[in-house]
Length: 258
Image 1: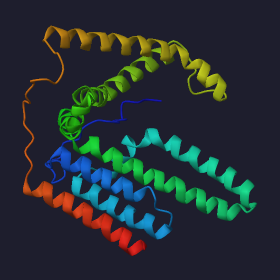
Image 2 (image 1 turned 90 degrees about the vertical axis):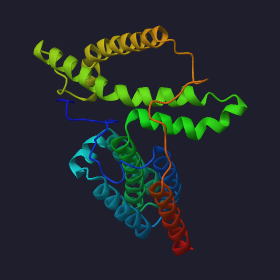
Image 3 (image 1 turned 30 degrees about the vertical axis):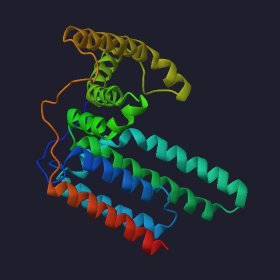
Image 4 (image 1 turned 60 degrees about the vertical axis):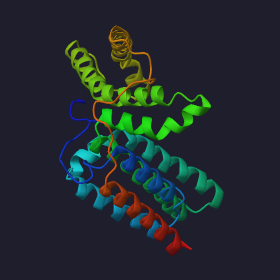
């Protein structure tokens, strides 16, 4: 029961075309695709987006094994959605096969959405992603919205997820060596056995947060006002092309759907 092979939020550099795109282009393209996948209600539409997802994964030069490992934490949500939809639709229609089909379609759509979202941190470094979010949210600063602070928090969260996974794995190994039974018994017994892992993990989280706050204060961090970037974002032709292709794909999907 190890978590060392889970790389949720971890950046996998491969030097692909997608990796070299501006983070703003990737964020905008992702929002377009998600806005089109979410209202998909047909099997044909789901297959359309699944093919596009395969093309994106192939273009990123990241193996499907890494992508599925990164998306593993959302599998529970997909399974829960599948079971819940079966129960709700069955009690409504009293027919198990249409209920299974509709539940499978809904959970598959959610899975495609989540894998598209997982591809963003896999192909974008946390610092670049934070800079891209900062640039996209900066127009909201005129309405007193803390754009830089929100982007910084998201970037730090993505950076610390792999570290917390490693700390969780160390704590679980230590507890297992002391005779803890984390993978035995029913669900309530497992949850009770997980408390010796959860409490030290919370202490580590607060300790790391305090260390990060002290380090930022020691370096004179006072927010985004007047700050410059180490690597300024540069919008190129490929970024314009990627956004245009995303717009064309989404528009073609809705035209064919109508």
